[in-house]
Image (cartoon, rainbow, N blue to C red; front, top):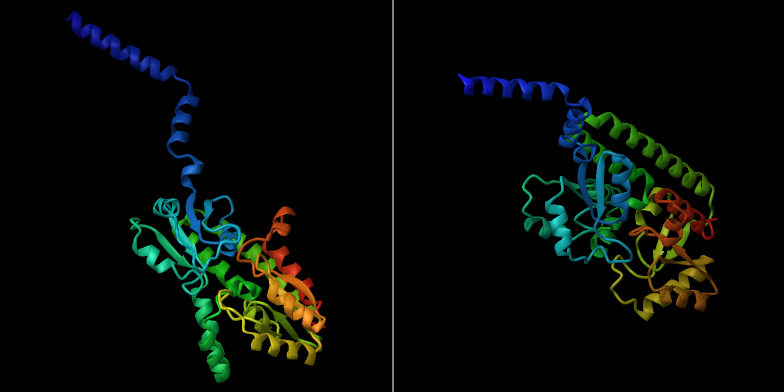
Length: 320
């Protein structure tokens, strides 16, 4: 009986202690169980434009990592052990296209994350644009096939809006609790992109000289959107050495059309552009392909929109 009384007293004491426990302790335990940080999506992106467009949609609801920084060649990137570990722990992996990050399909085969959601942000846009080109002009199709598929789709502000929509749809589906936020973020950024598009259209609408010369053939989408003609010294690949005959051909075109500026890509060796400029009397200027965010833009705390506005200013030196 004494033992029974002791047990009853102990139970009563424990109940009393529980009743007297501060409410904040209970709240803290619940907060520790489901913290806002744990609710965030874990997202890995490949390179700058993919990161930028994803971040604009995600807002505060995702932790986003970017694999490739600086001037690293995106086409021939080799994922590190850290990259693989990061993706294996992620909820979502987002890249631009198989044409841009050619190494992604092989990398995905070696992952251990069966629940990973993979998003090819611009894959459909690249294919649709190629299909449209082939329907409109057989010659243009031959050009596309001979030079490869241009993957620089992010240089067209209108097509970027489609990429933003793809990210929004993905996030809204897997995190429906915040779908309204994703939609609002996407619409706000798409509005900025539309404004940027309008600025490009207004700047070039009455231009009489619509040709521009680039060192690297990276600006086809931008040229097509605004009815411009890109004349590239080299091709889509930066690794192909430009022949003297090609430089002579470009020199002739520059003089024939009185082209005032030769553009080179940020982070690239400008020797070819300078060679053409020296032989024709043209100037040399930088044009952002935005495979990474230029330091001058990043230092100002700006991103894609501002970088593209600087591209517009640069192009206005030639498109007149």
